[in-house]
Amino acid sequence: MKLIGKGSKSYSILAAKCPQCHEGEMFQNPNPYRLASMFEMHTNCSVCGLDYEPEPNFYYGAMYVSYAYTVALFVAVYVIFAVFMGWAMWPTVGALALILVALGPFLFRVARVTYLNIFVRFDPNAVKKS
Ligand SMILES: [Zn+2]
Image 1 (cartoon, rainbow, N blue to C red):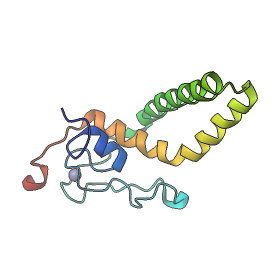
Image 2: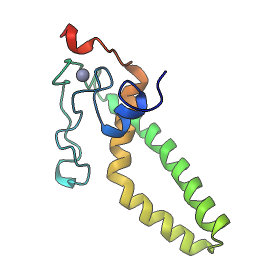
Image 3: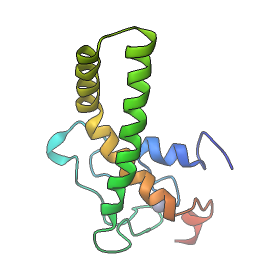
């Protein structure tokens, strides 16, 4: 299994590409910080036709993925600021809040793409088949 580059899960997740063909965009606007359109997803992959919502309310499960990423982020930020830099509790909490708000739209997308990636495998022939 590849860890980086096309054909790897990390590529699909970080670039918000279709988990099956790694070509099609999952979100209508590639910029997650366009807040007015950050929730708007395509219904199907424009390249291989993968259904992005395999069942109703599929992305409720992405909340758990988002939670896991957020906990990992909190632990990382805490270790960096409180342990290595010796910050007191409230400045560390403030830094956590700012970083979470700043990364919020990005984490939202990453959680959704990760969740779909759990159920869909990369298929190098997906483009040819459609
Ligand atoms: Zn696709």
